[in-house]
Every structure is written in C-alpha cells, then in structure tokens.
Image 1 (tube, rainbow, N blue to C red):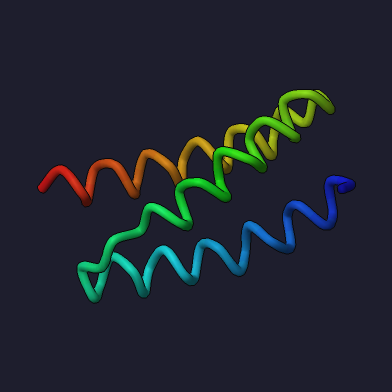
Image 2 (cartoon, one colour; image 1 turned 30 degrees about the horizontal axis):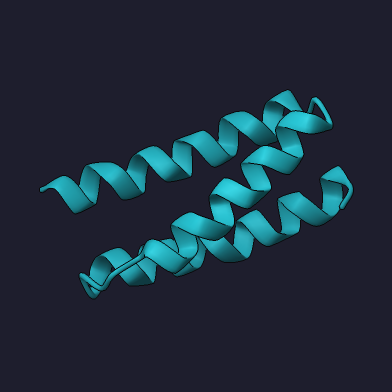
Length: 66
C-alpha cells in the first residue's frame, strides 16, 4: 500500500472508531487493522502516517480504559 491508500483507509477507520466508541462496542477488530497498518507504515518509513495511527490507537485505548 502506498501512503495515499493508507491515509484513505485511516479516514474510514477513524469514523468507525468514533462509531465504535459512541456505541461502546468491542473495537478489537479495528485495533488489529490499525496495528497491521502501523507495521506497514513503519516499514515504509511513513512518519506522518505512523503518528496518525498511534493517535487513533491511543484514543481507542483511553476510551476502553474508562
């Protein structure tokens, strides 16, 4: 995947995260996909994408802890 494709998917995932958190559902499937994208972005040295993925993951973790 190139950076544009990953960023597009992150936009969709971000919306899914919002819905998931609002409905207080289990977001583990989304988290798994984010970790896959994080690994791919890290391998391709996409620093901006890595930061965005980490922000979304942090948001997920913070909300699941509360």
